[in-house]
Image 1: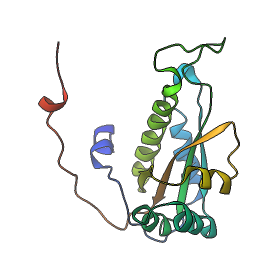
Image 2 (image 1 turned 60 degrees about the vertical axis):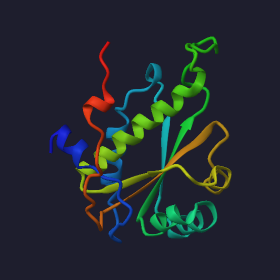
Image 3 (image 1 turned 180 degrees about the vertical axis):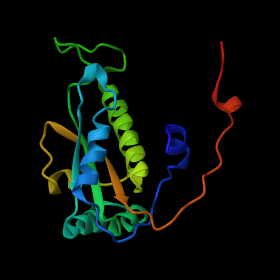
Image 4 (image 1 turned 90 degrees about the vertical axis):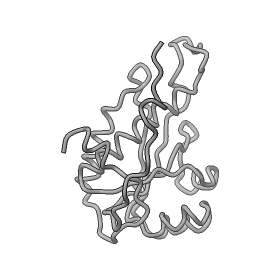
Length: 178
């Protein structure tokens, strides 16, 4: 599969088979994601692979709305994506480098999440990135240190559906030349 096929073939998967994911596959996906670009190569993104069904169930039942909980409950792995706070957008003296201040951290995490999802797709896995959940509750449950912040949850598993590509805007709608 080439890059274009991977990009155009990847879908948000919301239904998974119950098959376990071998740790070597997950580790390869995270290794690939580690090559994502980041602010001054700070590499702030971190991952927690949740396989324990009791933790997955608690996240689904107590910390996510039903539309996300239904996805989480049947995913064999849930990835909690975090980032190290206070490293992106800064100079060595602690000042901000740009007007965006520390908002670069979410950009860096987003790039890493997309790389993870594309690598998973290449490995035959499906993913969906979720951003609506109780951040404080999940942070406490997973014992995420104060130096990190929860950025996203990614359900990952072998797809049990093959959705068609949604309609895309045309290049004319998306691109402007000056």
